[in-house]
Image 1 (spheres, rainbow, N blue to C red):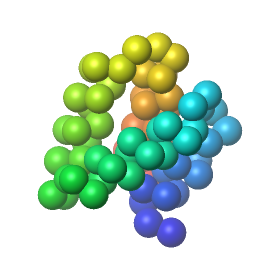
Image 2 (cartoon, one colour; image 1 turned 90 degrees about the vertical axis):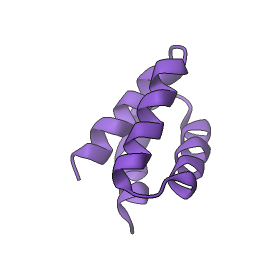
Image 3 (spheres, helix red, strand yellow; image 1 turned 30 degrees about the horizontal axis):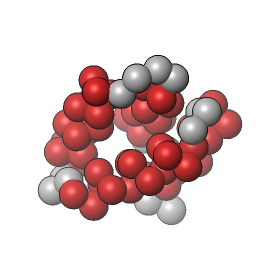
Image 4 (cartoon, rainbow, N blue to C red; image 1 turned 180 degrees about the horizontal axis):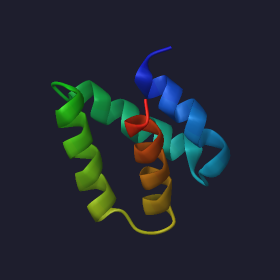
Length: 67
């Protein structure tokens, strides 16, 4: 299990829109050149997102950064 899948697994019980979150972060992961670039993309999405999805993204980010 890579760190992306592990963070998704850890976040799953806490997020409202898991499928949407999973699709988005997997797409960002594929587009990113490295971990820092992925975090940059993710933070840009957090800025654009509306609640309650923004909270889902923050939960994922917290789990991802803890790995």
